[in-house]
Structure formats: structure tokens, C-alpha cells
Image (tube, one colour):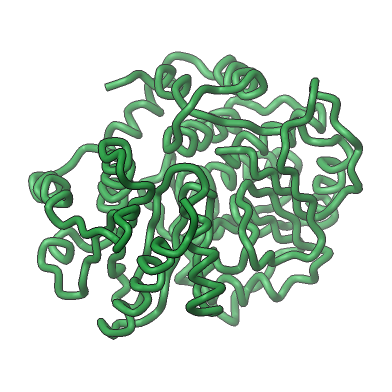
Length: 386
């Protein structure tokens, strides 16, 4: 198994230097009230959760009360509801009191929120909603945003008009952008914040291929310097425990390649898991380890089979209402497939993410409707230009 530093050095990541006036604008809004709700995206992963905990600790030291609204993610790093004042998305309802300010991390589209959480976010005036993201999703939930898509030359950052929502889609990790936020403010993250940012940075960048660019190495180096060997060991132990599989989980992972089907043009490999799938149901459906297995399967299948350009898995969730999709691809084919499906098959499709990694869902337990929804993406793979 590669060390955390070896894995960090083997992934691709870019995060532009953030304009100072942009960072100050967001910080001013965060300081405009006494309390902040920090929103994570649905099925909260390490990047969104650690983005939230980094801001939680920052706001706490600034004397501002904060609450994290997360979705699942119970095994995420240092998960502690008492320590971080966490409320689960499933517990949000019409009677939940809003804070003075809403902060959204690692998402910028309403498609990435549970319906009840989105209703809660709508309680806020747009002027009191700020966000930082690295996804180029459609359906932006805030009309006032800066979207940065290219690396600045020679680190000469233009003073862009400050907006409430800052999106840098060149970044592989939202935690990296948040480091740039603190950097722009001239504030050095303390150890607790650095540990959160490093953990989210590590996990999200480890899902991609390539080399760190110059700016990213700088971010990594500064985060690492704030941690000691015990901190790094704790992070390594955490990720090791998340990947340790039971006998049943190992058997499921081993059998996945035998269940592969292919789109008509052979460019997409996919697995369609049905409601009554005994093996999937015995695992507890989309547990965190099960989703890790599916992610590893998609990545390894894509790497081993040079004739395909994308790998998708479709599966029923543990809530018995939601049916999900996850696509991993070369280049930007995952997003092209999603965009084609939305344009040509159904405007109501809820899906999005990164150019090479997308997810989506539909709320239905009807196997016919589920299969029809699956076919939208399979057929879209046959239609796009590879």
C-alpha cells in the first residue's frame, strides 16, 4: 500500500490563488451574523465534510456559532456530533431554525442537496448565502457567483468583482480552495483546520490521476508543515480502516467484473443492480464501504480495459426510495453523457459532478422506471462523440 505522501504526489490537483477581495467579501458576510449553518452535499464525503469542519473551527475561533448539516458520512474523519455540532440531513424539517448566514461547501447546485435540506436553504435571503465549490454543475443555486476555470499565469491574480459564490472548477479538491481562501485573507490555518483540509485534499485528489502542479505542491507542503508525524499516522489509519473489507464485501467486489454489461458502441461498461439483488442487499446497500468498492471497481475497470471510455454503476440505496448512478470516465465523457441525457431524454434528470466523475439519482422503487432511467445514460453513451 502506498504511503499517504506517495498517493498525494501521484494525483492531479489545481487550485487557483483566490483574489483577496473575493475572499474578504465572503468573510465579511460570514461575520455579518452571530451564527452560520454550514451545508454539505448529499451523501457527504471527506472533501465536503472536512471543508465544513475547517470552516467550523475557523468560525468558532472568530466567536461565531456554527452548525454542520451533513448527510451520512458517519465514518468520516474525526466524526463527532458533540465536537462539531452536526445535524443530519434526514433530521432537517420545516421547523428547523435557520442561522443568520448559510455557507455551502463542495457544491453549487440544488441537485446535490436532499429535498428537505434545499427547502431549509431556501429560508435564507440570497444575500446571506455564500459558497465555495470546485464543480461545474448546472442548476446553480445562487445567481451571484464567480466561476474560475483557468490557472492564472505567474500567480498574477486579477481583482475580480467579488461574488457570494466562488467556483474554481480546475481544483480537484474543495479543501484546496479553502486553503487559498485563508491564504488570501492572510490567515494561517491552525493545526485543527490544517488537519481537516489535508484530509479532504488527500481523499478527493486520490480519486484522480496525474501529477501535482507547482501551486498544488505549495498547498500540500504548507498543510503538511502544520502537522506532525502522529497527525499523519492518524489520517493514514483512518483511511486504512475505511478500506478494510469483510469476507462478504470482498466476495461482492470480486464478483463485480462478472456482472459487466456494455453499451451498444462498447464505449461504456456498466453494472445495473436491481432492487432484489441479494448480494447487494446483504451488504446493506450503499454503505460507505460498498460505495468505496464501487468507486474502486469503476476506476480499475477503466484502467484495465483500454477499449472503453466510461464505467457506470446503477444501484438502489438503503433508504429504499432512491436509485443512484455513478460514472467514472476518461477526459470529460462522464459530464457529456449526463448533459446529453438531460437534453435529449429528460429535462428532469438529477445528475452532475466533475467532467470525469458524475453522480445522479431518481426517487422511485419501480423497477421499470429505474431501468428506463438507466437506459437514458447508456443510450447517451452511444450518442456522444468520444
